[in-house]
Amino acid sequence: MNQQMPKNLLGLDLQELAAMVVAAGEPAYRAQQIFHALYSERVPSLDQATSLSKEFRAALGAAGVSVGMPSIQKRFLSSDGTVRYLIELSDSETVETVWMPEGDEGETGDGSEAGEELAREGFERPPRGWRRTTICVSSQVGCAVNCQFCLTALLGVKRNLTAGEIVGQVIAVLRDQNVSPPNDRVNLVFMGMGEPFLNFENFIKAVRLLVAGVGITESRMTVSTAGIVPRIYDLAAEPVRPKLAISLNAPNDDLRTQIMPLNKKWDLEKLIAAAREFPLRNRERLTFEYVLLREINDSESHGRELAELIHGLKAKVNLIALNPGPGIEFKTPEELRVLEFQKTLTNAGVPAYIRRPRGRDIYAACGQLKRTVEVAS
Image (cartoon, rainbow, N blue to C red):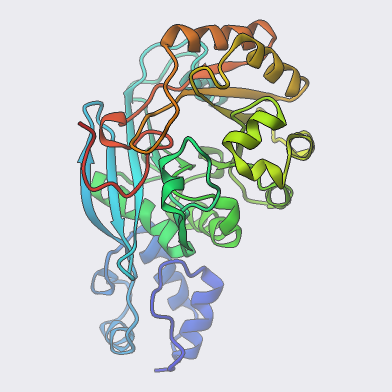
């Protein structure tokens, strides 16, 4: 067998698999068989890819080729049902992936995001057995962006994940939870460890594989960026892309630069210009994420300033009361303060939703991912 065979199959697209099987002297249809085994059947090893001949599987194994599935090293279960997974990669580095089961949503009509999703699909009320499950996916080992309120920033960045490692997180969690898209409803948010737009090529390749192979539609995916402006334009040009969320967190440059140093490179003028030019699909809106820090960015005047900043954009704001953690100096605002901030935005005509924390007790909530091997006390 050809000495240039890939070590891991997970992460290869159909064209790359076709080139591999041709180089191995196999018929072209083998590529589709492998693609289906990897992404639709989600086999953990070649031994279970029974659509392939025993001889071909043996030849791949002899050449050192494997599926390359990341392994689940630890699981942490929250009181709210959230599971934080510590995922080990082939070089023994680890990242975190979060499973957030929402359960039966019940009746809507409160302006919730779940209600919005139902409306997009033509339902006024949830159909029987409707569930809304979300997987939060990492894109880097650590993060280089250095947002001052985020635990992941304390790690720095070690390396980018490959497309196979990004897809592999999703598949490992789906297998562990015994969930199988497209029959089961699964949403993906690329909001875990790392800045996806600093690993754009691998991230977008993973998106294509998840759509074409795993069966999760792009309409069920959202990617969050701290504001890598050139990549916002790149995402806009992609034929297959998730929805866009921008981590904003401040309504002016002075404050944003203080808590998000990245703002020095791409300030709010550049960022909001990119947001205004971003092409939205039918019934799609931009999301601005705003982490509320007590007495830093959570006043009524900040709310009015934020509403003015994004005025005219087809967008909503997700409000996130800071999820605390060791090494983070900021404090979580009181619930009333959060509600007042939301009211300031809604009175200005800006749709605003308060994201309830999931898995805060196991360091699985937004901004808490740090490859933590213990749980919060």
